[in-house]
Image (tube, rainbow, N blue to C red; front, top):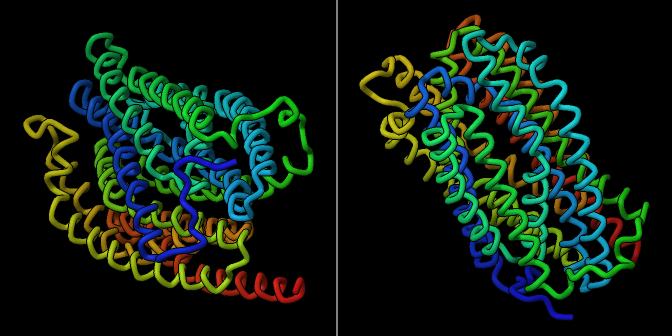
Length: 454
């Protein structure tokens, strides 16, 4: 049965395919960041710097659970992508059904676990007392509503797995617009402060997830699940989890590193917490082409692996590396040009401590020198996941965690806030320069297995 709006990446110009797939994702990622930035801007402008610091202080925990959702969904979609490349519609539909069931399970489990641990974790990283209650009210709501993030990312990943990178952007635009309106409503009309922006986020994500599900059901006949598809297939569920969990854990492991850095930042006080939060938002905004390109090469690799086109996979990775270099140079120019005006968006310049702006810009300028190893992480880690590897993403995440922790505990002692700014680049370099060798070893093994089958 034909699939509407799919993109077969097993034939045609690789450059054209990667760019046409990645650019809509990049646009979507920008709106995703704007989506997140609105929360920070609204609380910074309409509640105050302490509220901005409160939301910012939860960034590591938020990254941990939302990143888990993204990694889990991307992993589940790998099997769909491979079966699409193999033109196996029945198996693809079954994988989709089992992905939904597995996502429901993890939604409940994560909400229960992190809902209980919310306040203890904030105290563990020495969150300043003047912001800890607001921080807890924000992140607790995010935890309890994690199911909306998991299902939104699942349906978006399924669409991307069959080559449709445009529809998820449209649903993200819908969600972003709703989030802006709801943020203003729950902060200004109903003054709920930090809780208000969290509630707005959950509602907007939930509506976007529902819209994505309905769209898939109506526009993609192959994904119209039948009664027999809901019968639990333990072997398939195990395969989904085997690929999905390492991808999810890799985000969580990286997030632990971010949390460790956040713990070091908390010792500098709430103004520095606010500055680092703003700098991080700028970083996330200008680097979104890297994860978009990573998803592009992951889908490309998955489809071509299913089709048995191994040399095409190698060529795709080489081309994506060149594209990444160009993206890194452009991101460097943007951040060096616009870091200061970007920083002022989040706060009222008339009432804000100038040190907050200065430190936000310092962070942005420092990390701008290290975008190439960051881009390498997304190409080779996400691309290896598309080839079915859970081990490579896990290894790179552990390297990131290790070096970010070492940097966070040592560099601030010698360099103060500059040491904080160098913590993430240290992790990027460690993982980024190791991953190409892991990818080459993986491709060698895949090629040997292919020769044995022949």
